[in-house]
Image (tube, rainbow, N blue to C red; front, top):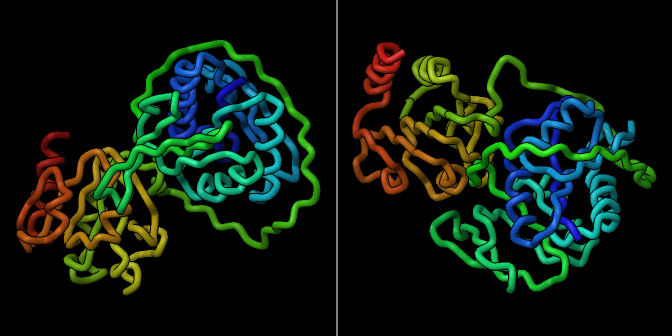
Amino acid sequence: MSVLVFTENWDGKFKKVSFELVSYASKIAEMLNTQTVALSIGNVQDDELKKLGNYAADKIISVKNEKLNILDNQAYTSVITQVAEKEGAKVVILAQNNMGKALAPRLSVKLKAGLGAGVSKLPSSTEPFTVFKKVYSGKAYSNVVIKSDVKILTLAQNSFEFEENTKSPAIENFDANIGDIKTSVSNVKKQTGKILLTDAEIVVSGGRGMKSSNNWAPIEELAQLLGAATACSRPVSDEGWRPHEEHTGQTGKIIAPNLYIAAGISGAIQHLAGISSSKCIVAINTDKDAPIFEAANYGIVGDASKVLPDLIQAVKEIK
């Protein structure tokens, strides 16, 4: 019996989300009085794999195969299933991101497991196994009981406070039966020189209240000062003012930074659904009745084009 956690790597390196997942899995393993097994798929060196031990992984399984250099959902599902069955995993944990959302339902079918998607806290009970999650775009909460023998959980990003708990896990190489890969990649474009939106601790975002694509300089300057990523609402990306990869919301990127600054964004429900997990939301809008203020921790009623320069100056003075 074990708790299996699937960790993602980017060019052979782990990021915060993987450490958060391992730490979360280790706490569930403690509740179930079992061990935490971390699974890594891809070409990750032992020195990097050992970092998972800093967050209480008891064992690390590494699957390296050139076929898996291409993300194929069917192949990855097969590998995770094989490892889960080998380790007798009763709980399988993934991230609530694009990859996790693609793999979790497939694993649920393969393992005949109940799925708790987008959980944000440790289970409140293991008998019955009860998990907490937000529903209705964060406007309500639900306690979900999973009755199946095997449980699958996807953890909402940046929802679990974790700390280092160093162990010395054994690293085991696993030769998975992969089969044919049906996915092919014809072109790859990687974003460089910018902080990835989904990884950012701080995000500065703009909406139609910025009035024009020519008025984006204060957004970018503030983001640079804060070491933040830039984002936008859907109308802005639809107008072509900003690239679509910056669109946050229900139909864009779901993010959970520690700080989200929304300038000139009214706060449509679709946008709030994508940023509601942010630890702190600061809203700047001319309309005091804008829905964004209901979700914001701090609000400034004013024109973003006038407020942002003052905010930038304040940050410069503090720095």
